[in-house]
Image (cartoon, rainbow, N blue to C red; front, side, top):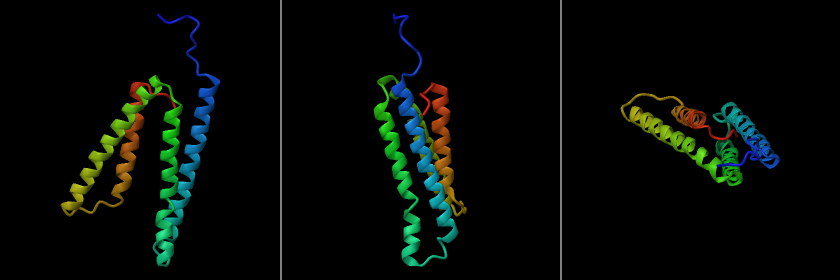
Length: 139
């Protein structure tokens, strides 16, 4: 039986880790959005070396976001990690099914415009929905 002195509130370190994580994620998402706006604005009209640069720049904040998520998971305790992984697993499974569906539709001759975005959004929604169901720690 646990002690009545155990607190259910987050410690100051946990609150700090969560705040830093949110700032880093939102910064990465903002830079990703700006890079994509630049890509959509100038990507088709840019010359050959600039087109490649504009295509690669949005991948940098995505790599940053992956690093931030891994670092956040390292600050979680064992129970928080146990709650966090089902969301990642379900999000990955949903993204895989969506990718296979988009690939199958494309192979059948259907024009799936921006199918990669559908895969990404469905994976993220699967991750977040599962986190809500299992009570995963808030980011």
